[in-house]
Amino acid sequence: MKKGLSFFLPVLMLFILSFSSCKKDVETIAGPQIAVSDDAPDLKELNAGQRVTIPVTVESIEGIRRLSYFFIKENANGTESGTPVNYDPTDFPEKLQRDIVFSAQPGLVELVIVSFDKLNRSSEVHLNFKEIRELPVLTFTDNVKFQQSVFENKQLTITGHVNSKYDLSSISFSSVVNNVESSAQSLQFSNKNSTDFSAQLVVQKGLSAIILKATNMYQGTVTDTFKIQTVVDDAVNISLAGGITSISKVFAGATNTISGSVSSGSNIASLSYALKVNGVYGPETAIAIGSPADAFNFTASYNGVKNAEAVRITGRNQGNKEKVIELPVLKVYNKLLTFTVELTTAIGPGKKNWFSAYRAPHVFDAASAASVQTMLDFAFVKYSASSFRIMPAGVVEAGAAYQTAMAPYMAGFNQATYTLVTVNRNSITESAFNSLEWDGDLTSFLETKILGPISEGGENYNIRTTNRRFNGELQVGKGFIIGWGAWRWGTTVADNKAFGLVMVKAYSVSNGQATTTLEIKVPDEDFRSKYNSESIHSYPL
Image 1: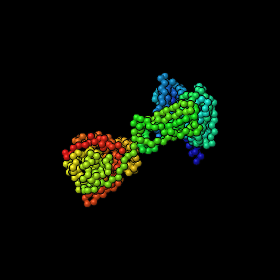
Image 2: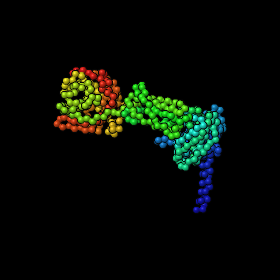
Image 3: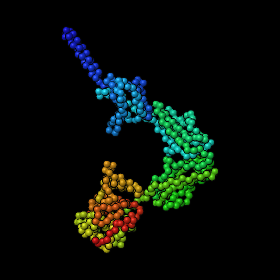
Image 4: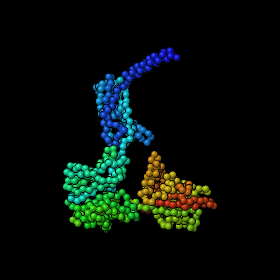
């Protein structure tokens, strides 16, 4: 055994030396040598936004053709490689020193450094990140961080809130007067992860900004600035919550509110608002003056109306200084008209076949329908022995079968109205239907869920141009669309301009006739009358 072992050991050593020699030979033909300086910061100890410099040295006796780097980042599916940054020296140096400089961002996983020599051989180094630590989040109250004017020698208070994943170590503020920043003043706080702040100072001439800073235990610092446009002796300043300059929507027939703050060089004597409707401002309505009377928050409540165009707020102080701001209304939302009706295909006195959204009592039997024929939207019709359909009068143009089916319901008619009537749409669920209360919401629903592309959650169904005129498959819990606009008989393209929704609440068939209960939502503007000149045709054909 000893003899065998003594023979085996030299052979083993020879094999190891041979392998080592081979490995060394491989290294001599590898790409450039990449060395990261010992002075490079530890990538496992970074704050978001931190400026990082990585000194890199590359050497190759063959000459260096390229130094490149890129980041591997987290994404929804795992990770992805970012776009490389390349440096290509034209003189192919044997030694190259460069700094890789970047800002640390959340989601970084790895920094990959790659170099190629003149023979296109490459080497790479991978530097791993740990967690890129989040910075504190600093917000000003109501997200307002600008004031047009402040008043000399008066106390100014800037408030806000700080949230921090890591314990806060300090919150401070400094002021900028005549472009010179003051030394920082610390603010007290008790909760190290979520706290309000209040910075107070006396206004000086030349004040242009108040700088807030919040720093966490890892020296991660966030900075934001409250800006001042001018310092004045006396004036009235009105700021709206959120810094708004217009009102995105007014709800007609409902209470709307607008909030803001007032500051003044002297006490406010009056504060009021007025609503502009059809080009004319209504009476001024007083807004309560707060305490202290020279700086306070306010909330004004007003009743929205259909043709609202703007809201004006006027403030006047005891120094007879006045400030007026006008906020244009971008959109007025009106409540949808909602009907629940029962229709039948059976014909006879009191048997309601027709529906009209804009003519009371909204449902009509065949005998009374002719007297309101220009206001009718659709009827519930027996099309065949086993088919019962929602159809407008204008469907008679579609062929003899429709003319035959509609004739008993159109006795005494000399005109036929066009109404869009679609099949059931998958997007019109009971929950979606029930959630719609305002015309603006209905418009948004149609734009996104019906007209919108399939890739974005819509149905890609162009209700604006289709001349569809019947729903022949009523199902409880299913909904369809009706619409008003222009359509020329004999053409396949319509110009539908306004729409409503219909939800089937009940449906039954008995003794060869059908009954249905429908809930219908339409805009409150009379689109039937508005588009009648473009949607009425002579009858009989």
